Amino acid sequence: MDKVVARKLRPWEGRKLQRMKRQLTNAVNSRHARIILLSRGGVRNRQTAERCGCTAAWVRQIIHRFNDGGIEAITWYPYYGVRGGPRKFVAEVAEQIAEVALSPPKELIGMSVWSLPKLREYLVAQGIVESISLEWVRQILRRRKIRWRHTKSWKESTDPEFWPKYRRIRHLYARRPPDGRRISVDEFGPLNLLPRHGKHYARTGHVDRLRATYHRTGGVRHMFGAYDLERDTLVGRFVEKKNWSTFLSFLKWLRRQYRSGEVLHVILDNAGYHLKAEVLAYAAQHRIKFYFTPTGGSWLNRIECHFTAMKKFALDNTDYRSHEEQQAAIERYLSWRNGARDISLCSWRSHCRQRKNVA
Image 1: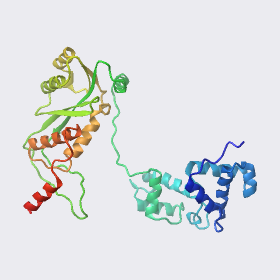
Image 2: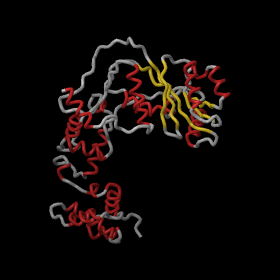
Image 3: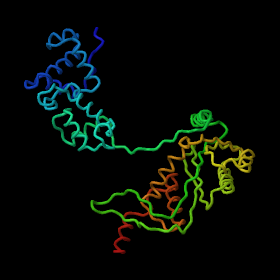
Image 4: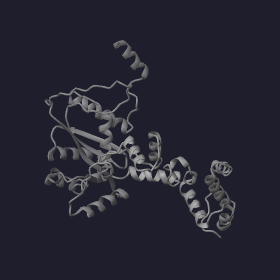
């Protein structure tokens, strides 16, 4: 029995293959459709090759292509080939386009980044395709899950105790200790009073304007945040200064939020005031166990991703003029995020009436 057989056909694939088999103007597609249909009908690959006028190796290759990429992988269009050049299959051309898009543009075109017009121009110049539209290039990249992505920075940890700390924290995330709760703690800030750009829905040609000049006369604030992995809640307290005494006050407040019999397993970074003797002594006396992230490994702290969402929905595209206003916005977001309030602060009808009265 053949080891290489066509996979089970979807209903629409069977109908399309039947139409391809009856094509008179494209013998290649007709032959490939017959190969797949014969394979699904239980015909041996060697017998299929004799009926279709090709080799058994080619039959196996067409079946592999179909199993991996579907009908598109065995479809051939003459206009994808360069004039006078070899015939090319859609799947092969698309894969080559994807490889070019993922290649460094500095080496290929002497520029730092691709764009769709430059990519199309390079494909045509290199004879990969004779002609292709920008939309078709975009669709090919999209089907192969190639997206426009921003680059990000990455910092390698130089902590000699990286792996022991990493395993300790990962083990804590994997299994909740039977005697307590897992809590991620970190600081958010500094919170300045300045305009912050963001994104929002707007009609074409209209955009909100934020002031370009500002004076930092209001000082800064900091927020000590705590993310409870069991409750999935994010809470915080605002302070004017970030030092061991304000952190100890926050730690005492956090301890009061839970039963005294529970052990708090706290993940936090290696800030100097976290290691202050008074802080460590209080933690040891009140059933608080610290798990320090490695140096340069703050990404191990799960509260970081929740801070990102808080910044986007409470601070981006804003221009707060007082710390009280800024703090109230963050607290409104945290209240919604923790399920303490509904999404609506004002009904749509009331908003329309207020807007009409102002106008």
